[in-house]
Length: 135
Ligand code: HEC
Image (tube, rainbow, N blue to C red; front, side, top):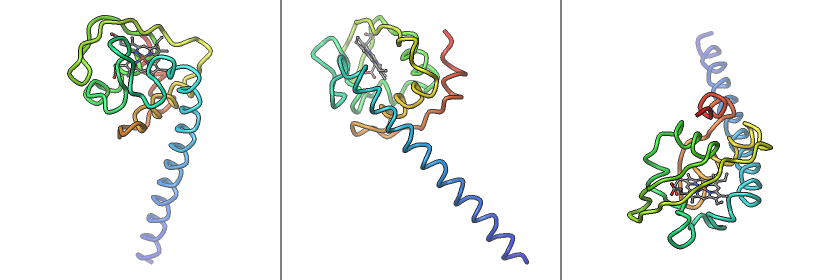
């Protein structure tokens, strides 16, 4: 009986894990599409940034060291002012995200950036976006 209960518990965690992996894959696919249609213009195809104007997302220490709620706010509401990314100073303007993108879209694109270009970061959910996107 005890081993049956353990098997049920194990199965539960296995299914939960598979669901999480499927969610991540779906977010990554959606995020890649949005990255390529929107973010790529500035941050470039491999997230390497461009010159002294657009900072890199690839292996960005800023992305890694800034708490996720703030990253969500900046991507949604835009960001300007001096920042340092991988030792280089930038002082540009990132416009707010076009309103057509849903919380799910935003979760996808941030998850994509967090887990692409040599980065390894968290999975962002639509609920995280909803909670943190307000200024
Ligand atoms: C019009 C150009 C432009 C677009 C489009 C754009 N960004 Fe940015 N992004 C910038 C600039 C410029 C900065 C630096 C702002 C500053 O100097 O304060 C920046 C900064 C950032 C940062 C923090 C700095 C870093 O390099 O880690 C992140 C994260 C980021 N952008 C993610 C995104 C994502 C995700 C998208 C697409 C949803 C996107 N950006 C679209 C121009 C852009």
